[in-house]
Length: 148
Length: 415
Image (tube, rainbow over all chains, first blue to last red; front, side, top):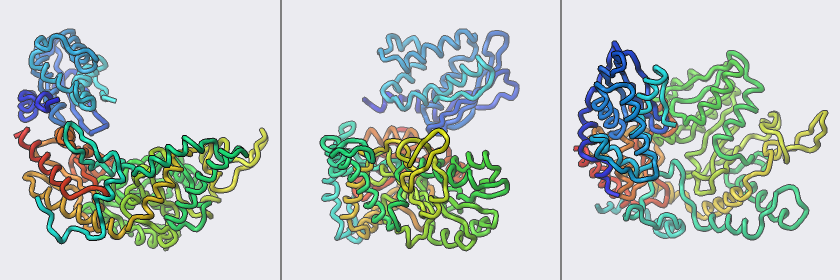
């Protein structure tokens, strides 16, 4: 188990300079992700135009894994439909939690870098925090998502 | 890094102590384990492991019930530990030693049994800003039911209790004071004798959360004059799932049972139940017998240590750790009280505590990262989380060096 599998360059980079790290005042959907174990707290802001995520951002504080994951999420999902976004959520969720080795990480693109948490069970919550918040924002329109 | 001769204690042979703790002698990720998470839970000496194992192999039966030999053996071992605890903390009577699951249950017991009966709207419960959630939430729950108010004494920027403010907040409205002896999050040692004396001038009883002090020091209930004192076995090198509530007999006698069931009764019919005497009144159901037996062996182990030498060794470790951590660029120690236990909380400017925890683990170092069940302390210092290295008497100076090297590795990784 090499730490660099967890802290790949792309993770370090997105932690150091998170993309779309801002508040969108005119959002249509929002939800907070909170990890009570470590205190990580992220807020996702989404603008839906029809069925398309026309803008998406986040704010908050957390470890490198949770911040990089949120940053990668916003980068990936901007311009996607809600259906596509939820499909990506499902795919990533399977990668994080399935006992089977992921078959095709390439298909996940940059998000594949998050698969390193598989070897660190206590850190899966960090990587999935923003995704749970996204899911909650799109499905229920704004309650706090918890990783517990 | 060599250790200056002045910080080495002559009396304290740390290698001899380490030989008593089998778990310390292992590798994690190919590196020698450096266990610095003792404030969360410490490790057990072989004698405690053997005592629990011997109990299950030879003596187990339910306590206080059978007339057969095994039940009598189990009862003797269980009650024998009660006397060991009484003597260890110098309580006046074994009736004052209640076995519970841990500090959390002890505080809940007092909050529910003592507080819920007596507190009225307008009454105040005085705690401090540095309490563990276990000494906050049980009181909040009682406040909700009774209309009493939770009053929180502030701390200073060093993480010390503000005694002037505390003194002012202690009034005729105060019905109980509940204070941690030592902060689990930042290591500050509170002046509990002074607090107890102050509260008693107002006829206010005091509960001390001793979870963090028992692993580091010895306490004397009669000298302290504490009304309640709660602690956990697992933090003081004993088994998990067992702890002690000490309470003055007159107070415990005046309180209703906390839970109902077997062992806490004298006679039951469907009209009325007669409750048992202390301490059985507060020990409903079959207790954690093996845990209590193991705690007895823990007390035997602690009794053969020289606690002056322990204190000197831990102070030297603390001084060395704080001095070495201060050399790490961008590191800030959270909690700089003058009187501190061997607990160091810190943050690094470029690496989140949670990432630190994972990275130093890859070097074999176990530290705690997060809010340490003390979110108000984190809010006070405006940090989301800290990393915490907490030392026990079996830790060595060179383990500090391993920690510091691991922190520098973490910084490089994020540079």
